[in-house]
Length: 282
Ligand SMILES: O=C(O)CCC(=O)C(=O)O
Image (cartoon, rainbow, N blue to C red; front, side, top):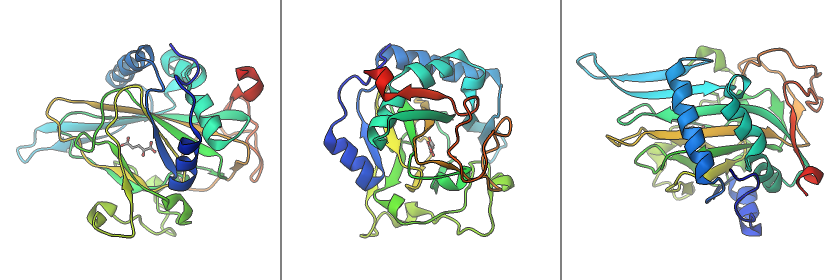
């Protein structure tokens, strides 16, 4: 399994990340990673463990069809997810795109959409979900199956990370704990594909490719229209150097309270372990 990105990340890719708030990097993880993590993802879903969040589509006759399954912090209990967090090229990719020398882990999040899932991923940006502030937060969304617009590939609005819009967080199952009534709900941008002011980005992805996105970029995904193709993506979230702890209501709950005061860099090595440093990689 490859420890470093399979090829160098180019200056154009770094520029795309900075300007668009997202870049798709092809072939970053070898097939051993993709196969191991596909199997681990399905096994985790089948185990029913952890903080499961899911939506089942119900047909008019009451039968269930599609399933949008999500979970978080899998690496707390599963060695495969822990290995992907620490030993895959993901943290090096994160450091390269953010231009930082040290990477701490924030959390991992699994997104599976079974064939014929109608449930969409609502348009949102990530920072309203998170008790942090800063620019140096990044998600590496690794595809372990093919993903296209048809099968719920993630879509983005280029440059929306610079809009300075803090949209209300909304989970697939509409958990009220995340809804901050003081924030503006995120529009349904799927109704605005013909808006000439918006540039939508999406990619046909294969296992081994990853999306790398900024915490403020607006993104969402449709349902999985395929009758046969499951869609599996793992977002691993990493912290860089300018991040500050900003505990707010309506954000992701950590397993325990961090040893960290509001406004401080999150140096809690248990919750946010350092998993990559530039000199180690040399
Ligand atoms: O995979 C999805 O449907 C959503 C992904 C996402 O929102 C994220 O990784 O931040």
